[in-house]
Image 1 (tube, each protein chain N blue to C red):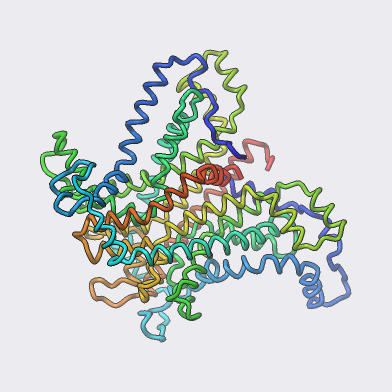
Image 2: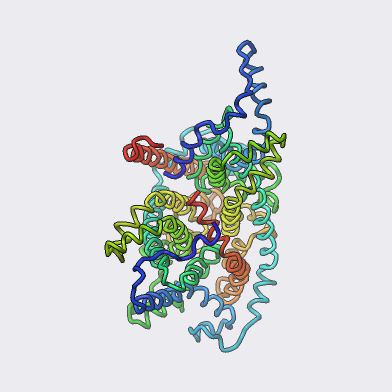
Length: 288
Length: 338
């Protein structure tokens, strides 16, 4: 599983001319530069003054304006929103991984009355977009008194994307060999312990997949946090915070670029450090 | 379809051990039977409980509740919901804004998924070359937008595409490709293509990873054999590699389509659905009617819910049709092997 996406296949054959490879690399490098230009522009703008931004379209700022970051952090409250996003992401990853792994394990490995009904229900709802269910979800959270706090937001963020993960886990668990499980059962190990100590470790690749996909989902989520934080701006996530900043300060491009930079730097660092897990985890979604 | 394969495989009983001591007493009453079943499988049900509660609250209940709300006239402010039956639906059928949003959602799906899948497949094949030393680096660069929050991307792109001093217009003017700045997000003709372009930029990296994973399953000897036959380049790609990775295409298509239906964040942060509803997709229509009465009108939760139900019903039928078609295709291909 690890290192699975290292480039090793041959497209042009062993004897492809070096010039061809060099040319391909050069074209790709140029395209990549254009591809990540929005990021370069964003970081560069976040360091310019509002005046310079209009006068100097180049990427290198003449004078570093760190005040943009102060404005973003203090006035636009990015620090707080950052913390909120972290809580929602971590909380929902925990809830989703545990609950979908257990559900997928039972659905994937055992036959019991009602199994088929559950399975069909999950597969059928995969296509339902968030907009379809947002109104009842909001009403439900209001009824429970959770419509304006982080716990409610975490719960709802967990609930939305889990269907796909249940199906993925069920598929993965159904393919695992049953010798270990049976041996453990003969030894008298309880149902829950077999799952926790024997089966879950075997499903590690799928656990990584689900964690990565849920992190991406929670970090990107917008509609749900937007609706839930309408009544309580203090619990906004980064995405909603930067959207609100745009509404309030539509001319402060440099401040907004600073806010945007703040909100992506941690994920980008995390991604570069854990790249292997990201890539292999996502690959696991198609490979099953 | 990938999901169908999984479910079909799962339908066979996987573990007879646990079934063997199920209560089968014919003389006992139905109630006893049910209680007995619950007892036998209590651990199974218990283990499913957390997931089922979550799904029940946020997936299954909302579907039924949405249908219930859709039958009512309800502002959300008051407790009273007036039952109107199919009234909301008749109103929707006559609402051109609804149909435009509906069409735009499908247009978005059709505009993004095929392009995204094709471009990323070509890129994956290029990056998969053994001799290309910088593959991993390129992959990282292409993947960057995927890990960036959508709302941030939307806002940065509104700056980049701005007709006032935006870098994209700056470049176009410098190159002489246009004589005056194009208001990409401000005119109804260019807004959808612009949003579609940004969407593809944002999510291309993830499809690329899926294709790369698929390409890894092509065995080395296939390439060796192709080389002996002097088959290389695009001929190798189209005639040899493509047929092998075809089964993955369905899974990737499914995942990409599901993703392309959740476009709310990108469009909301770029255009708010404007100009003049020019980029209003279904989710924005629902949100605007339910929560954000910018124009001072009263929220219409029932009406918005009805729109969701109608759209959801269409998607569900499309899914079922697709599943049936795939199953039929599979059967005729593999002689009912699944």
